Image (cartoon, rainbow, N blue to C red; front, top):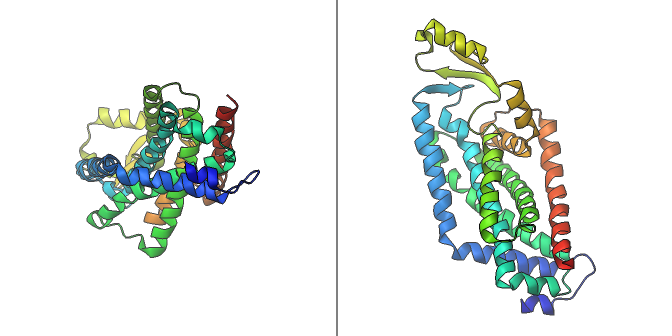
Length: 295
């Protein structure tokens, strides 16, 4: 932390402080191989095993294989885990005393928070890029332009989730407590984003024409109607509300648009949420860090 003490101070923004905090997050990631293993194992489990396993039952979703459909969702899952894990480090830093050195230094809290956020977002992009290695295996080719846009969406999602995680971490007393909270955050954000099931559309199933009448009637009651070459799926209203209230839904939809050229929500809504959410969580993280300094 001596670099923080030597850096010239500014009342609100200090590029040197941002750089130190950013670099520290990247060094932490480079020394922690378990994160890479975790991202790789999640990709194999969700994309390969689940994708091809359920793909044996679903012929396609709106013209895409099931593995292709959940591909952006697996990227999102890796980003969520990486971003919140970066936020978890805030609790650890506070316990071992390193964060106290930063808080008592004259470093601007906005710069400290921004460096932490950029570091978390960078790690999230690296982790989110792991599923891209499997893209040729499932027949996905976003192209160079799509790849660059996908990295941009990952970075903004990483900023958003890291900022929200820092807000939560600033209010946690122990490292163990944040672990339970993070699991309670990741799973709802992931499953209520349309990552593993479409918000609406046609799913081609194997043997749907041979369904018993009683089962077909039950599916119709749930909003799943068998017509032509597949099932027409419409989520229940209460579930639609939860999905639309979830900001990750819009990041995922935009990520699916740039990687698969398939979108389920209006582009204007996606861009609005993706543009506003990182700004709000950056301010939230800065306020949380300032509150920790005052305490």
